[in-house]
Length: 376
Image (tube, rainbow, N blue to C red):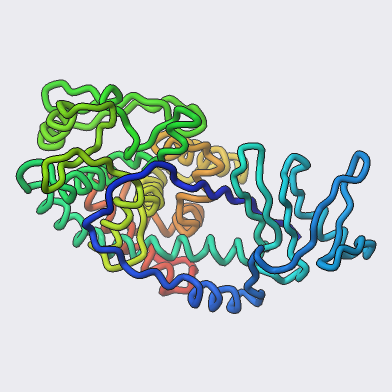
């Protein structure tokens, strides 16, 4: 059995309570239902589990009663999880069908999770299912953003709308305070005023992003440039701050942005959905203008696909491997390979952003309606 590794990082930093109403989250019933649908059992590391103990140059494993585990089948499953030796506070699920197979803490005390392969596959499939739902609510969200950007002054809703608009236009990661503090890497909500230069209505972003990657991009929007210029006049290094009813400066964080998205759309969408949507749409445009190789067989096909994904990855600031696995709907790639994508999306569609979005959404709906089969 293979497992996937996920890093959950708690957001640090305190801010004033947001005035954006929070949408109640009932995660557990939905999560349990989804786990059952995958043929697995919902588990938590609060439950008794297997403990890892150092033994010489390796490790020994103790069951919930503190007895040494010698069953080779159990040990084989544990080894397959490939839990790094440096992890501490390791907990391993006693049930091979638990949706969560192991947890531990890395050198920075960040909690790491190992999930069952079936749960990972189902979760990834659900992630891409969200692309269509997100595309459906985007017009409503954009109308709200336009309305909030028209407000006077720098109220919370206006600054949050500005960030959402930038998410939509640039696909920059949302960011969190801990990464900014510990790694000196930034996302939208943690940008400093020095990270954005303005020139005749044009915004130029230049900052150190995740994994130390230097991000440089430009956006031509006089309206947004004017608001950002006003924000840069406020005291303090942080770019995104709002003024409360008493005129006091308050910071903005990623959770406030996600609350704004949930409240506006009425769905459980987050800033990351912009990147999945944007990656999928851009991939559709790039592949639509990438001819299928007439010669060279599978090797030529792989080479052309790799070049297209590399172009999308550059926009997102990811490696091509991560871009393909996490940000491009698999049906877009399959559609290019079987030629059905090109029947719906013309090579020039990428020149018109909204048209490309509409055509991408239309193609995905047709393909899914056909059960994922070729749809012309």
